[in-house]
Length: 141
Image (cartoon, rainbow, N blue to C red; front, side, top):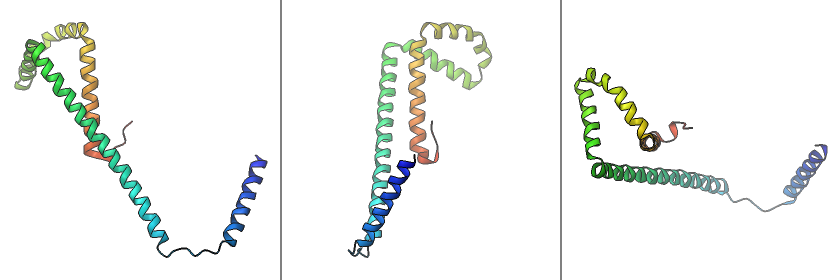
């Protein structure tokens, strides 16, 4: 540790001596140019982040659209049943839905991989949407 301190002190002394010997004039607008470059780099970083979020949101919407098309083509009865179930619960027929919960658990048990992938994709789409809507104001883990 003490060797590092001596090296750092020696470096500081050498740097200070070199700066004192240096006699080139600094341009008047040097600070403004440096601050402009810093602002430009920050703007590029923010723009790159926005472009990435837009690409992720676009890819998620394409994937969800594809999944909706595949679901409509290969599982039309299941899609209709799911939409009827959602419609029934929204209209107020939730009382009859309580008896279907064990049946729904059995169906989920048989095809849990499919529903897990859908849940992960939905969570990712919500994550991207929050990033697009709220930007840097929301800290995401």
